[in-house]
Length: 476
Image 1: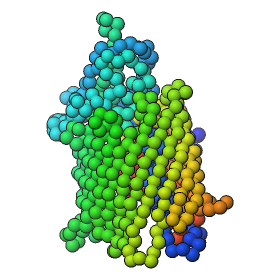
Image 2 (image 1 turned 135 degrees about the vertical axis):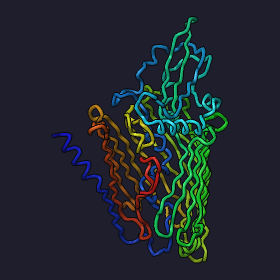
Image 3 (image 1 turned 30 degrees about the horizontal axis):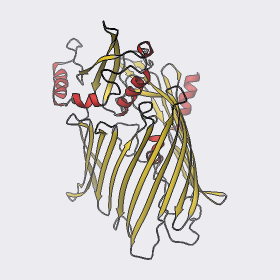
Image 4 (image 1 turned 120 degrees about the horizontal axis):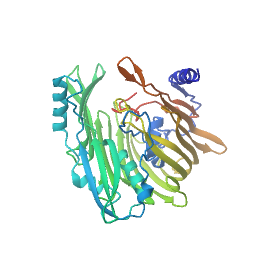
């Protein structure tokens, strides 16, 4: 009965409620558009908040028939301090072929062909992604953190470290891995005048790099509308620095983004940071005026080692400068310098949950919590105001197989004693245990977004778009 009530409540939550209460524009008679508007949706807000990006990516892992098992099915503490005499990497085929499974031969042939065309990650790339090497003394926390880093790359469906003793009282570490098949080609008809053709490979040429190219065409007039491309280079120069590049060119709209950052890799590193640059422009017919925007950003964070891993405290600072060029003249856009500080507490590990990679990124679920307190100030050309934010992420197994993940966000600027451009968002996710119906095993995934905004500008909207929970990341 309890399970039925819980399922019913989450079904009700799937009706996403979005209220946009637009009060009078808070412009005080000045014709301008805030350059740090509320981001177009909650997910974009999460991406803009660099401190939340590292925590709780929905990364999953294949497992045996057990519904959920701890990440640390082996206790690495037993070998703590022992010298590592060797590290062996074992790459398995993407698709496992079982001749005795009763599959038709054509199906096995398709799997063999997929294994053949899939480029496995090069061994040198894999070696540079490890936190341990031959000659080191084993730190169990580094091994756990290394697992999380490898899963965060999103390239693997299975990963496991195993440790064996040697005759000279040292140890050998075996890393067994199975990659995902990532080459994706698809086409989608967005409307009668717009079609999207997509090519994506998250392990380009076996380098571990991610590539995406999207072409937009008008199927009625048979002409190109524009294109976008993105490229991600993780672990540049073997320094665990990630480079990101993206470019968009559409009629009346364009953008260029370039960034470099070292994500949270505690306890392997205690210091993290990044730099980014972006430029955007809009013009008729997309907009009534020509607007060009440039944004420069930098951030730095430090994790404190006074708690036992995986718990840790951290502080961070982010700086952003935004400038605009507007044509025709006479309209004012808000140029500003924005400083944002953060205090955070994180504690998370992962658990396996089988059979989710058909609709999620893989089969590996976060288990833990995060709390962040953010304070900032916008030094604007036309307006100066403080910013306050509280972010939380919580995930837990209610009972074996029942999984609940919740993200809570409250962000607001302040004008005197009143909040403006403020919103609160709740994003719950529920995943049920695997159940057998005839010859099929099924799960239920129930999620929603509940958003309430206050005193937004007349030109602002809050909408739902990219969804990280699903494999293709398509627009909702």
